[in-house]
Amino acid sequence: MTGRLVILASGGTGGHMFPAEALASALLARGHRVALVTDRRGQAFADRLPEVALHRIPAGRLDTGLIGKAMGVGEMILGTLAAGKLLGRLQPAIAVGFGGYPSVPTMLAAARRRVATVLHEQNALMGRANRLLAPRVTRIATSFPQVQGVKQADIARIAFTGNPVRPEIVKLRDTLYPAPSGTINLLVTGGSQGARILSAVIPDALAQLPETLKSRIALMQQARPEDLERVRETHRRSGINAEVAPFFHDLPARLGRAHLVIARAGASTVSELCVAGRPAILVPFAAAADDHQSFNARALGDAGAAWVMPERDFTPAALAAKLAALLAAPDAMVAAAAAARKLGMPDAAARLADLVLACANADAPRENAA
Image (cartoon, rainbow, N blue to C red; front, side, top):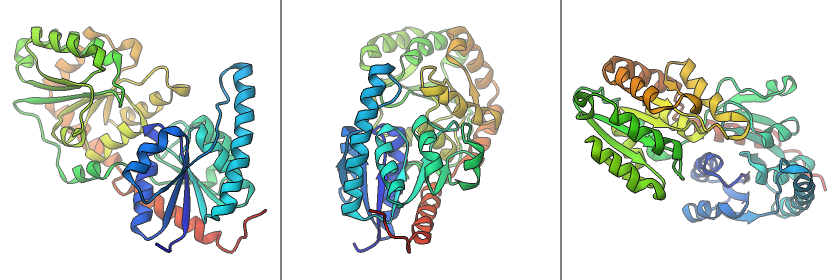
């Protein structure tokens, strides 16, 4: 492969890694070379895309008290120096940051060496790492048309590309929403680790539904391993037809069958819901950094694509009332599915790749600084 080298810098969580992986696949398909700089959690990325060279450098957080901040700054300095040496050796055409503190040293080093740089922001509220980096980069790609936390001076460099999702989700774009009539397929997912509040509230909420509605529900619920038996037993006593597991490896297929989803509001989740065109009840994770999931959820709620229930309001009685109203009015779910589909960006990976390569080409005559 003889194409230009693109460096990806990312934190190790799925929300950062999924779009980085999608961009890497798009760039590899166009004949370019890709390397990833991350922390120890990035190994799974390399396992899925062995063509991508994996590099690890030190990176510390800056938000954990005075001692923690001091240690984080020290580690960030070491990481930036290490990243500078790495970039000097690799000579990339461009560096693309996906957020998370592990991305900061590489992006700072790239900006210092005058390498072209692009940030990708997955959320409707710009993350702390990206807010730190934004004034220093060439362009900023966003997943939402409107993103909070962007400084006025940085707005002119924003490009709305959408948030790349897995190819299996993109394929759902051709599967029309299965308007509910008899059985209601209800999918519950709380991210890779599950969400305890969903396991605590949903079984009791479904138990409160009228028997006529209970008999129509086919539930697919993700739950933490320690919650599995309790959740299964509650559904069994309630007469709910439920499949409960810690993780669904065929989640895209289940999403394609779902009439309604109950989920957190992480960036990847809301992007996948929109690309697939599926309505959802969103329960933002209250402890998420800067409450960014609430911003994601409200973006869908304001568009009529989802119903937002903050954790403080997410009680069995409130959820039972919401479900009873929705299941009795399938037209509302059909309308929300259509609204979600309008927000979907199935070509986000291609759009982001176009932006990255355009920035690299515009910067081509510039020599890296020593």
